[in-house]
Length: 430
Image 1 (tube, helix red, strand yellow):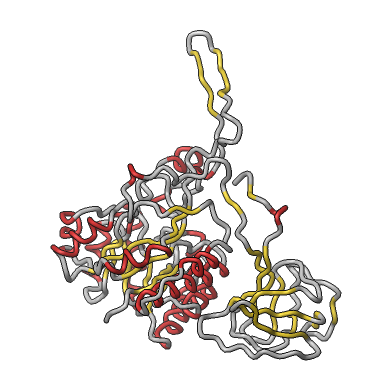
Image 2 (cartoon, rainbow, N blue to C red; image 1 turned 90 degrees about the horizontal axis):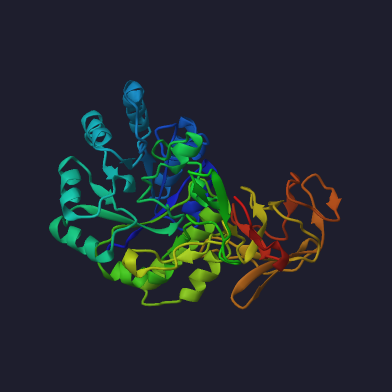
């Protein structure tokens, strides 16, 4: 049986490696302003991106290069050079968003698989067929599409691969077709520089043009004024319906600009959900335990399973972001012998280990600390905070660049976490 592909975001070389180590089959990312995530694109040099591709290929995994921006006429010659340069790095596919760029890629690099971005808003068989005829080998469907419509597309175009988003930020507009950021700050969403204006709180006023009177409208207490703030997508508990449809080739996680911990946890959670489906196991609580540990805007299952008009819980009106159930306290370095502090850490703190699936961790007790298992989870407790330079610290804080010794070796990029404190609360403003 051909398993569905798990596709994760790769905003940096480190995040690329983390996503693959924690269970992704493939990652997507890009270099330069022709990618729809300028901030993450700047994190990748061509050399880093090539290293990431080689890292993936050595592990039998894939990298898809994003060239999904909407170019100006003045950029077309630069775009042609960029396409040829990216092709030399040998990614496994290009992700593109417009008919013109799709055709240009097909003409310049005819053997390169081409994935059509969700920005193209494909919702039906007619549009899917047009893009397939133009050379698209995969359609990343609009977030607003239903599973029933995916079935119809696959029925008509069985050779066309279909990819769907299952987790991450949701756009207030129709699959990214938004002008709010452009109007308010001049930052164009479809050219990679959205300012996320929909995440801001807004005050509402009523004006009388005849008298020049302006009234501020007071909202009901507790309702909030984040009137365009969409909740985050979370379909981990719906993998059975998605995979039983038999029409989805790849499930995609959003988040190239999010943290390394996000890359790890989302890959791990959806890897478990996918593998459990093929093993006839369902354990939604296990996947959600991981995903709830992330900062989020509240979760929704959005529109793939239910139609938009059936959903009335897709917005977070009273906050823009809330802390997850856990706080990252440390990240293990590439040696596996030390970690860098990400939050205040004291001797005796109990730190939960978040490692790639299948990791075998030695349970021991020595002069540095101990590792032990409880309720199916592995923990580390440090007796002393011994830095790599031999200094012993009484406590370490986020920003401390001294690697701290672990009692036993852990896989590179393993995370250590603690439960979030109640007083951490939510983020009241963007």
